[in-house]
Length: 108
Image 1 (cartoon, helix red, strand yellow):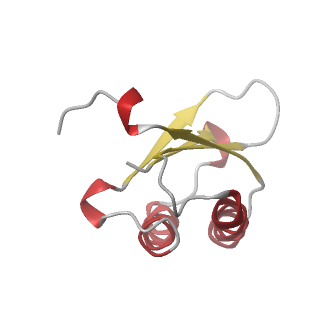
Image 2 (cartoon, rainbow, N blue to C red):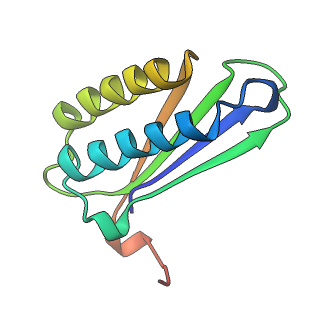
């Protein structure tokens, strides 16, 4: 963890090159700002049939940690939003969800 999932309107899906650049931005933000281990960062893109709202919806799931306060998460979301606009030209709705370690049951 963190897991960054992008749900992108099928008609607005950026090129593979742009997605690779955005992935790099996400990894950098997760390792530098959230202090995550590189091996724990996951970034995925899901092409969706759009119903209503922003063409991109981003869900960030992360393990709660003392360093991941509102003072850290707010600049993280701002930097993520800027990266999305820079790499795709699209405005995204971003939601971050922190989970206590005791609430996470996982493998691999």
